[in-house]
Image (cartoon, rainbow, N blue to C red; front, top):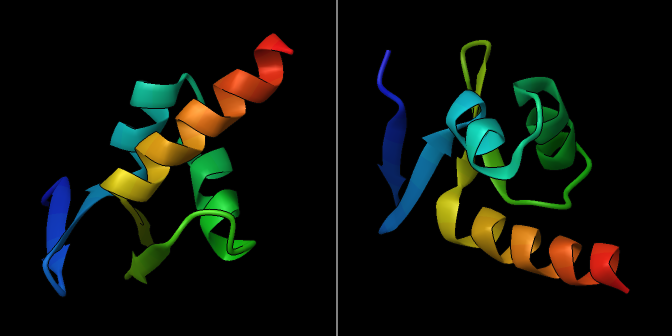
Length: 67
């Protein structure tokens, strides 16, 4: 299965790949999508997250952790 999708001009990456980027499990990334904290879409059983939005989430989350 592909690790990225392009939907409406946006790049979506697999939750497993996003988890590797942020140091999270893919289940946690999927939960962020289900809760609406990060834009994502489910294809079959796999979750894909908007890469740009997820990177922004990581920046915001990192700044909160450092305070």
